Image (cartoon, rainbow, N blue to C red; front, side):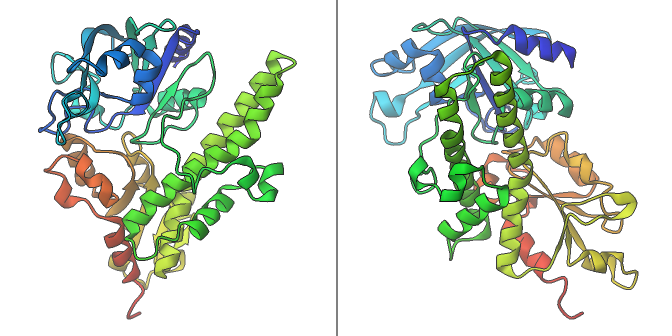
Length: 407
């Protein structure tokens, strides 16, 4: 862990720009049909670290740049190619591409693009002087949950499929996401009580439910849309509370550090509960009975037990009419945590927003009788061989709702 902390400190000066993301199956070689494989590079990162390449993209076809890169976490070196495939933009092809990727990793089992790296948290630190394209890249691929926690403690929440661009010298991420105006509120649009104190996670979710009921949409669609809305709402409240304090300045470094710690702690707290709260809302809307946060054997606490913890504890209630659901934003290195949470239930269901797993990772889950629950919009990010075995949110709710009937 010490080497990671030192690495982050060494690459945190004003000439460094970080891209922090969970690697999806489209970033690695987890999907066999990936063309020109390599991590996707966001528009926000291109604008921040490659201003000249952005200019070239307006007049050149598929502009590129050579980039020496060191994966410090795994002690490997690469001469990468950053290429912006822009046939849609440069040639007006309606079905063309308009995306940038880091390519030329050499072997398909290179640490960053290996299928088993799908779901890993990665930090791409670009060395870039103002007005010039980045001239070097250092990478840290988290090797454990502990390393992931250390990175998130430094940068704040990272949402799967979104990632952040984080200039360490600024201490605040560049969003880069289009604002959903009905979710991103101006300070004078916030509920009056929220202007004086930060709302709880439950209050944020309740606001989303009131303003984004999305009746008639599937549970999968509601979950994805509502969580995106809640994230934007959270960021708007955060801006309203934090930006005036930043503009006012700080009397000491300690005061700045205290505020930064407060921001990061709030983000971590929200990230840990947000998804569970949205799942609760879907279950309540469907009228599905459940117990949330109740303890089983040895004071272990699964996220959800169906139809109830009382039924689970009753020896007269058949085990085949019980379900458990773990809820984790990402599942790599975390899915094993649910294996011992409910001994009466051999098959564990795990809801995740992670974009893809490798075939090998999925095989390990199957061997331990873990079934992935994945919102339908994310199914396409998984290898084709895996997709038929994924459970949708809608179908899981149907299964859970049938447990308490005919009792």
